[in-house]
Amino acid sequence: MKYSDKVLDHFMNPRNMGEIEDATTTGTVGNPVCGDIMKMDLKIVNNVIVDAKFMTFGCGSAIATSSMSTELIIGKTTDEALDLTNRVVAEALDGLPPVKMHCSVLAEQAVKKALETYYKREGLMTPERAKKFAILGKCEHDDDHENCECSDE
Ligand code: FES
Image 1 (tube, rainbow, N blue to C red):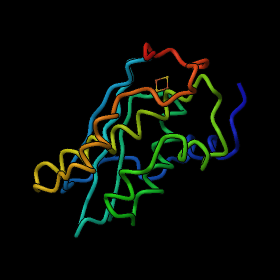
Image 2 (cartoon, rainbow, N blue to C red):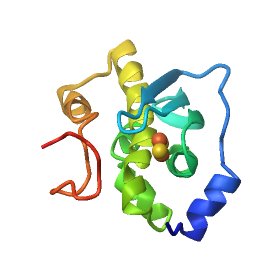
Image 3 (cartoon, rainbow, N blue to C red):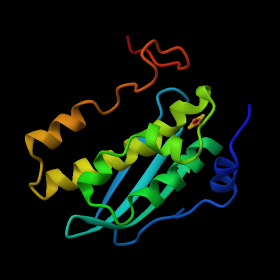
């Protein structure tokens, strides 16, 4: 399996690994494919993500995608972060081997879970936002699911 230099860099030198003591919200999710776990802490001020940190019992690809995800969402509004997909993160890493794409879903879902909790708690869940959360957990792999082990049709 061949990994890009960026994946290797983020795996060996993960950015923003750890916890935020006074996090505004937290998302913890498990990967149904491999059973690995991810926790994402977000610090949000005026709807802007000012800090993000992750911890994971995940593989190297999960670590690399989480690391890249935190870099991509810090400084963004919560709505901009909500639109960040695992594909965008994988592209920012110059790609992941197809069998490892499911690992990148973990970071995306942890971010979204944290945002969902935040929106609900703050009374900010609008129908448009709710629609985006409705697809949470669905496989975003190729249309024919050629390279994944999910059970989606
Ligand atoms: Fe579990 Fe990659 S194998 S996250």
